[in-house]
Image (tube, rainbow, N blue to C red; front, side):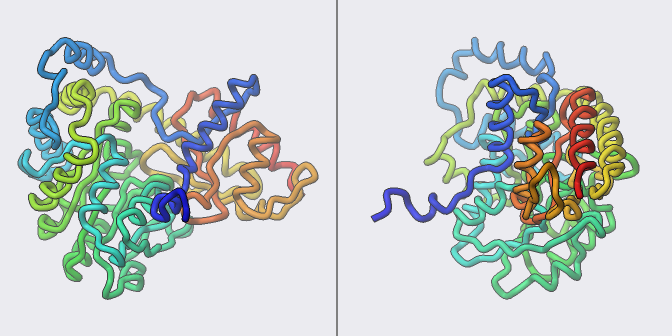
Amino acid sequence: MSRISARVAAISESATLAVDARAKAMKAAGRPVIGFGAGEPDFPTPGYIVEAAVAACAEDRFHKYTPPGGLPELKQAIAAKTLRDSGFEVDAGRVLITNGGKHAVYAVFATLLDPGDEVLVVAPYWTTYPEAIKLAGGVQVDVVTDEDSGYLASVEQLEAARTDRTKALLFVSPSNPTGAVYSPEQVEAIGRWAVEHDLWVVTDEIYEHLVYGSATFTSIATAVPELADKVVVLNGVAKTYAMTGWRVGWLIGPSDVVKAATNLQSHSTSNVSNVAQAAALAAVSGDLSAVAEMRTAFDRRRRTMVRMLNEIPGVVCPEPFGAFYVYPSVKELIGKEIRGRRAASSVELAELVLEEAEVAVVPGEAFGTPGYFRLSYALGDDDLAEGVTRLGKLFGEAR
């Protein structure tokens, strides 16, 4: 008899966190590794948010249990922030505060899916989605995109993947790992297709404020009001406010879904840390000046990285318009000789890059599409330039 349940044993380690941990370990050992793996802003949490947390520590009520679904004042503030930022009007009773965005992903699929229910997932996809769907007993159906389409799925592709067992579409714009952003027209078309086929839409909007150039963020919940009773919005403070370590996310959905997910949370984690919730309250109630500053830096780095990567023979990097990642194709480099070695996959190529160039990237296998790398540009300008320069020097030796 196995010591570990088959359900949990089937979970894969987070590839992005594993790459980041290895890079940090190598740096601690004295190697000058530059890490492009972690998906977190390289900015500190704004001071006014930290101050709100410090003040919360002194409040007696925050030393006790609070409602498992979240502080009422935070739920109300998130409802107001959602109306402000995306035009989607909800009441506080349709908000559940979760232990970070990952917890919201787990909660929604645990709440919606029965064994065998299918979820359409556009690939490349974030590494946590498949594991959350699998834990819920669901079946992931990939809708694969590539650089030719800008990593955008069409209604025709979605329809070709739909079956009688399809229960939900996972919709992500801006996207991790590709940075793809759907136009308002594309968002509406996909939303209306979902309504036509009576599908749930789970939309992850955590990168809503990180869009560049002519791109605009459009919430599918706002673009297609008819979806209101079958749409669940996931979000959190991690990316917008540089609060990855505070672990506050949320889920917005129909009342019955939120009630069921809250019941689940009451038996799993109970309330999110009250101090972190107080910090999140300050974040979502404040203005967006902090994210505007970050966005300016990310946009500069984005353009630099795309230009430098596309100057490397064998690398093809579409321009991303959201989040803080690029997702270049390295398919032309697989199988070529580089310093006496031939990588047979992008996993092996990423290993070679780490060992020979001391640069950490995440291979496309982690995101469902081999032959690619994900690189985050949420790091300092000098490190970014040095890291891509090292890649160019290494790949320039490919034969």
